[in-house]
Length: 135
Image 1: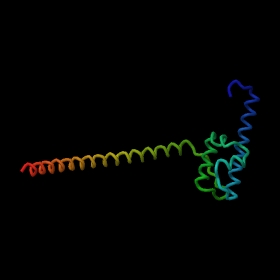
Image 2: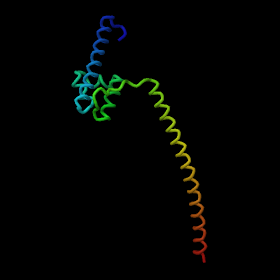
Image 3: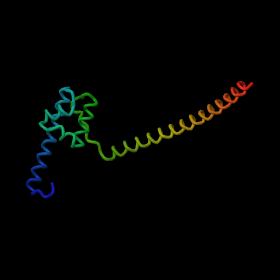
Image 4: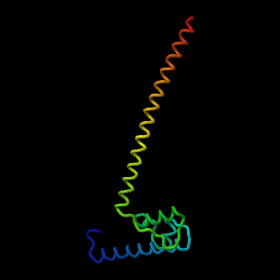
């Protein structure tokens, strides 16, 4: 919005804020009435586009949470996630991935050892078979 006059920037901002308020109210209403929650339903009830909901991270997170729950009780709209909670979630997932990587690496080592043993047994059996075939 750079280059726009201040009054246009202000009008755009207030329109966006009003649309966000309508979306939150529509979501709350759908939840209170036990309706199914999805982006289309919230957009229709709020008079906004689904693109608007997708482009606003806080609204998108709210809709996705309620959609996953399949609706919810009255007044259960959670607050948007903070950077700290997002950061802790990322750290927890990174730790989980690191643990899974270690487990997989250990499994690969065990499987390689088992494969070496199998190759050795296979070689011994081939040598025995070769001795019996030459007799």
